Image (tube, rainbow, N blue to C red; front, side, top):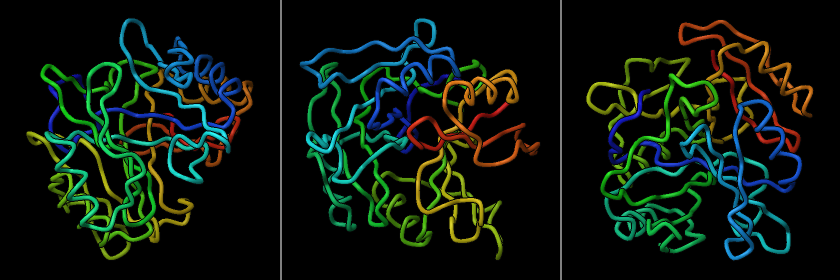
Length: 258
């Protein structure tokens, strides 16, 4: 996915909530070539990941005492989806059975954001689109986020929720009796996907899967293992590229794609 104007329903931002920022910070710097900076005590030591001169992700320290995200949220990548009006989207989400953990708020950069769990229990951010906003994802640059998909334990309910709340229009050309994987299309291009976790043995429960582009999956996996991560799948050659599922030192799951 190339950098383009941000549209409703697309991925606006990604964060990792982590119980060990001191472990994951050097891990992602080593594996993906990021430069990560602390935004300061006044912002809860939220960390911003840079790839060259571009922001690509956030790292949120989470402790049992502070729990700035949802109760129990630990060590996971979380996706925020773009909406034109965060208050209206949060109201729709609540009406559709979501649990709102943070009501719409203004971020330090002036953006608007809400944090919730969808009706199936998967954490989600809603981010209001600002003028000039662009895609975070850039599948052409090594180290950048390249794709995201939601694997759900309740596919029908998740499908209804994301259709009604963020306006996903899901393409069913990859849906069958044994595999359900539907993509939200923008201008004819896939932007994000929903998959049925109950039909895939390798997926452990409902969660977001975020993919990061690398030049060489095997070399990146070696860096990840040297930095305290581990592979939770074999390296696989697929029609969409060579990929592997990895956990960071705290157990947060993500994927590397070549």
